[in-house]
Length: 115
Image 1 (cartoon, one colour):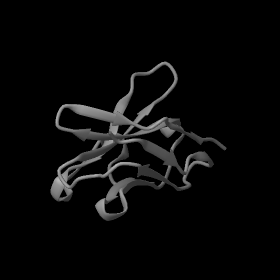
Image 2 (cartoon, one colour):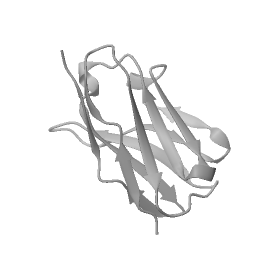
Image 3 (spheres, one colour):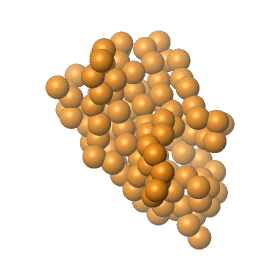
């Protein structure tokens, strides 16, 4: 079992930055895939970024070159650095660990980008 807790959300102006962190209570293994998803009001949850074993990353086109996902297996944490935030990035962000056929989710953290 893995329990995930996000932190770092909040209100930021367009062009600003935020760093989201996800702390796991259970052990994170190197073969786990970590990801960040988001869900805006009235929209489906979408994958924003993921990082696989070995460090291979994947980003949705809308955040590529603005967001960076990273992981620290030793500290059981992974993060999402978000730069040059836009109003359309406003959503609840969820961290996720995918292990074999099981998904673990955090409770979500609100990110609001507004002037």
